[in-house]
Image (cartoon, rainbow, N blue to C red; front, side, top):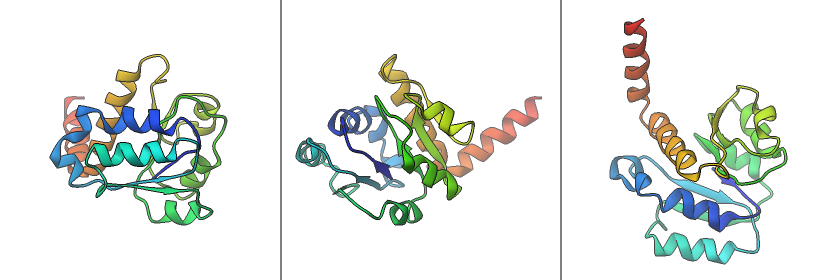
Length: 156
């Protein structure tokens, strides 16, 4: 679930056009819902189509039922270049959902160690995308996460 109102095409392209997210084992587990409206909504729809992702990415446009969409989601992702303090993050955290968000604007303070903070994409976009992909893979494949935790614990 990724809510959005602005800069959506740039964000979507950065995330979805990344070669890192085209690994079939990841895509088999993922289904993106993009909620929100903005001046570039049609551009986003065309980009999803051009990338051949229409079966995996649904651009819903403006919605009033964000809380319901969050209820139906497993992971909340808000990759962003600029934000204030988005209410959608608070809604996802209140529902105890894994939250993956960019370290921009008021997000780091709002998150307060309650989720995964991506590097600021304004500083290093490649790092932000790499961390996002790694976190999605870990959350999509919990057995890998568990094996990593147990392996790390055995080294201590």
